Image 1 (cartoon, helix red, strand yellow):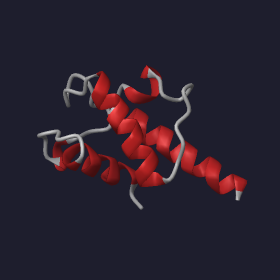
Image 2 (cartoon, one colour):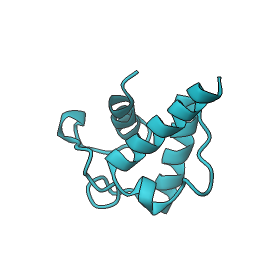
Image 3 (spheres, one colour):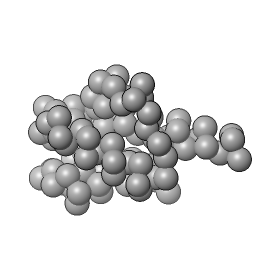
Length: 87
């Protein structure tokens, strides 16, 4: 599963971001480039958890991890890796 492509798809289909996936870059600000507001961040958290089967704890639900597309990608990949290590 390509994490970045999946996240881009979620932004477009679930969060209604009106930017084509091919124009989305890891350094893009979720707020400035995609217009996410506080509710959008919560919706994104829920979508990440449901889609990837992960749990994003309150410590990880932070501006550090949710400021850019690449930040969310890195968080999801780390949580997926942590799950594999536990198994």
